[in-house]
Length: 353
Image 1 (cartoon, rainbow, N blue to C red):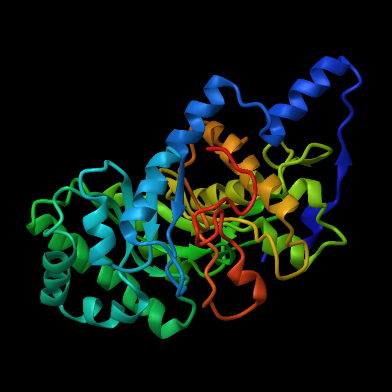
Image 2: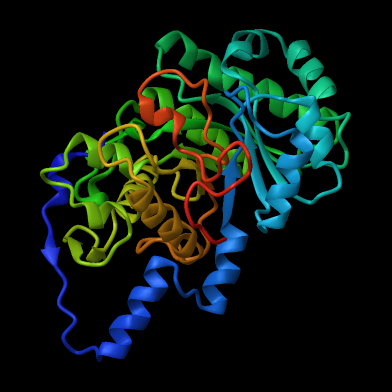
């Protein structure tokens, strides 16, 4: 979890701006007005996760049509789904596909199982723009974690044998709390380098990014006394200074991502890229979960990631969670309300890509 002391705010004074400049800045930040550059960057940087834990969701072909109509050019799915893969064929939509946590032991223990997985789930779909294979999503138990790197290596070998090694990158998707000491961001380190170090070395050797799920919402929910809502939702008004790197932060998302970059430097793998494999804000079901807050965060995220973070500029590839509200998800009631859209394909709230 995000360390609570990150949130001590410092109000930002903008007295030099005219009322018209205030209006334009506010409009751009809140998504009422996007500059052409921001529009372009947003389209190139934002994907959306397509969860399917619901009994009333659109067909895969309708889902893909909605992605295309909104200009969303990347998708994440959490297991190979043949109907989705068929619908994606020929669309040019980039795909981040999970193997599914349940198959990790088999992929780790048997290279032929990895070859069979690639033969069944990748090779039959030459028209799909596979970008990444995520070997495990938020695997937290130690036995499960031991299977991740062997499975990654076996899948990498299977993809290479199939002639896809240069096209499809193999990684794993981790929770943000694999990083600790995250305030200030320049202090970030990996909590268990014995676990993460070999994975990072593998990623560095293959040129694959580290996939990280980054949720300012859960940080805010866990410590609303110190984390200011505006700081968590890309709304102007709070700045945090990092004396360690000399950078200034105006939103929690940037601070969290930059702590990951600091951890990569500490692990001596600074060249490993970061892809944010999940980020979002619920619109109902719990503390701070309102349509207004969800819109502020998600529109802010769309507008923002094309420019990167204070520590690392340039587009930051980010996958928003999720495309639809899913009515069969278990756990906290907010889990059913992370969707940008309702199952009937209507917008859960106003959002622009």
